[in-house]
Image 1 (cartoon, rainbow, N blue to C red):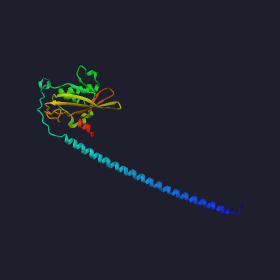
Image 2: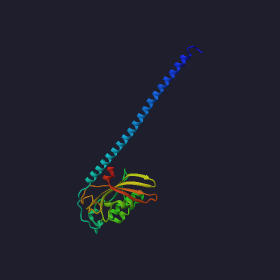
Image 3: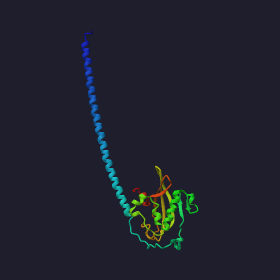
Image 4: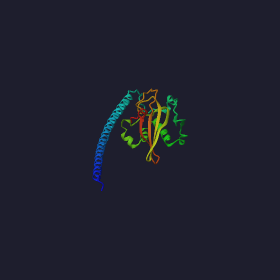
Length: 244
């Protein structure tokens, strides 16, 4: 055995102890770093959650305020002619002189739909052709039958009860959107028209002599059997606002 064996062994043991001590120190620091990281992550998640709640609340308040302002801007007093439920508008020369064609705009081309050519159009387009003619005829029973049961149950003030024949003219409609959910296909269709001598029984948001338009969007649903109903109805202003 070498004379300095004990000294070398003592040196090796000391180095091993120092190495172990350094490793323990490194491990301790690592644990502290990991613990601090975990606390930071937890704090960041909590802060993010609070921030999301605040943003959600702010967004909700902003939308509610915008919706209230929109509805307020659409609320005004209108003047109507007296309703005459006996009037046959199809014998009124003034109305017959108007452009009473029903135009369909497919985005690139406008065509006139008639009883003779209606079969060449899609079922949804034919449905809207019927909607327009039902309004003109003042057939409020047939009109309400166009809607889903859920809509009629929840329509409230939007539900149209008895109304007279409506002198619609400059009539046009076009597709806004189409999508499918399960076995149901949905179509958003904008209908635009003017009403001569409006009496307020059907449209209570137009003056009797209003020269403008207030387009409406009919949201149609078609089930797997091909039955089409009006799932929702709103003014184009509301539809475009994104608040409904």
